Length: 111
Length: 113
Image 1 (cartoon, each protein chain N blue to C red):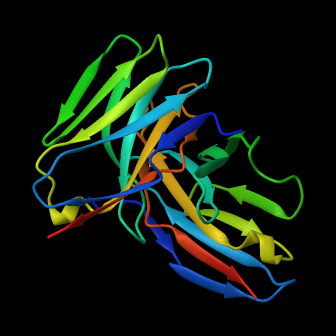
Image 2 (cartoon, one colour):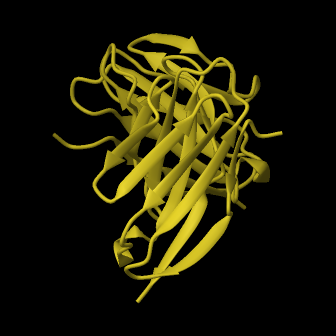
């Protein structure tokens, strides 16, 4: 069983709308949680990184939240753009180098 | 500063052949990580290397797979006697000493016929 579960598996939204992606994890011990964006045919690119003590972190139109008690995180995309179409991956760090990846949520933004 | 570079981007091999995947880390990065991504699945850790040393290879199959990061030149992930199940995207990431953020390359897509 994957230690990082993401939902939904995919979603389609209209340009300009907002959306929220979910991540539940059971990885332990926990060092930090990251969200990556992966465009088709490319490698993942880091969006945010949060430690145990942080509840929220923003990067432009991307806002990530973390509830370490319930082991849940979310990524909110505001005013979506066509270029936001990608896979968004939740990644939990076990130690300073070993990462546990979710399968990703595929977001498609339509005009 | 060029990003992490991987080549080839696409590689086709027949069963039983060898596959060599190369990764050039970002300038100043001495830590390299290899991941494998099967279709519809998340990336899976394979191996973590520093210059001339394998730090953690717990995610790498015991047979047919090997990795190295020599003092000079790129890191190499070598798969001997490939089988169809080896078909996947292989990503390399790098980081400088003391920094947790890993920077990913574009990946090599291996197809075994």
